[in-house]
Image (cartoon, rainbow, N blue to C red):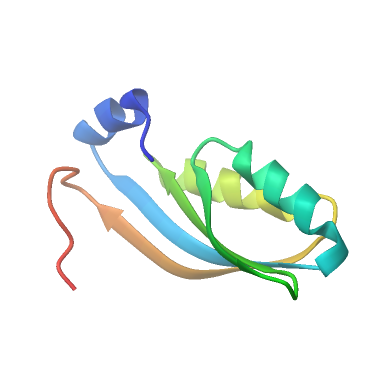
Length: 98
């Protein structure tokens, strides 16, 4: 999901990865899904028919990550965005072991 520019920036410092639950009225599914897909650094990973999406956000700065989440909050029809996970990776070549 990282662009080449994000990867180069990550080599110079931290890289932020987070996930969020986005809630909205089901009738806004197409609009919300489309708007999130248009945001660089955001990717929909799961959805349901009741108005919830799981979205992963990646950025080379915490401010960038917060900006993407704020843009999601501002999408017409979005009722709530809840951050559920945030990881700061200072070595972009390392692998996360769970």
